Amino acid sequence: MSKRVVIIQGHPDAQTRHFGHALADEYAKGCEDGGHEVRRIEVARLDFPFLRTKEDFEKGSPPDSIVQAQDAIKWADHLVILYPLWLGSMPAVLKAFLEQVLRPGFAFEYQTSGGMAKKLLAGRSARIVVTMGMPAVVFQWVFFAHSLKSLQRNILGFCGITPIKSTLIGSIEGMNDQQRMGWLDEMRGLGEKGS
Image (tube, rainbow, N blue to C red; front, top):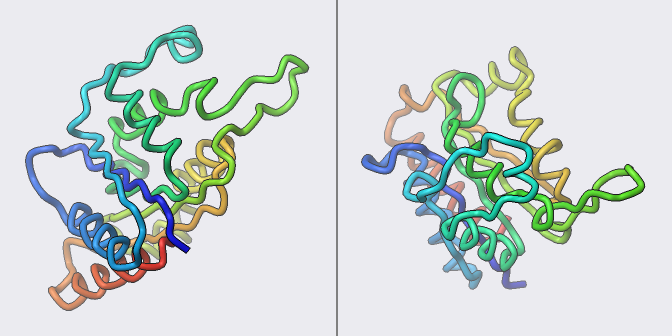
């Protein structure tokens, strides 16, 4: 079954291509091979301010770049979020983007009864791809992947996105060409399946 896929590239460097960009390219190629429609969001290339108040988060008007990103997410069946692990979490610009995009009224709706918020992005799935310098097993079993779990449960899951799968790619500085090609092939295969 054909899917509508949005790839969100969360690397904060808009000037240089990194391994994460190659991973996103291969995922997109796989999507095209599998007959899926693809749109891409390069967070580092967007112009938007950081949110600084609760009032702005809840009642402010998002800038045009964020409205366009919201339109793409609304269109999508499946989201792919790629980012490098920085200080144990996602880079600040990606977090700022998610705060801007996943606002009340778009991603969730507060309930007047005080119960759980209504999840407005239900019906969408996601894959999170994280690259890191440390071995992935260390991130998972020594640091318990806390930041990844927070993104899965407290951010995406809170908005109704499920299932959420993850791909952790560790020790990227020490990879040889064959290992890199293996990961690129893996991404292309996932893209072909829209998974």
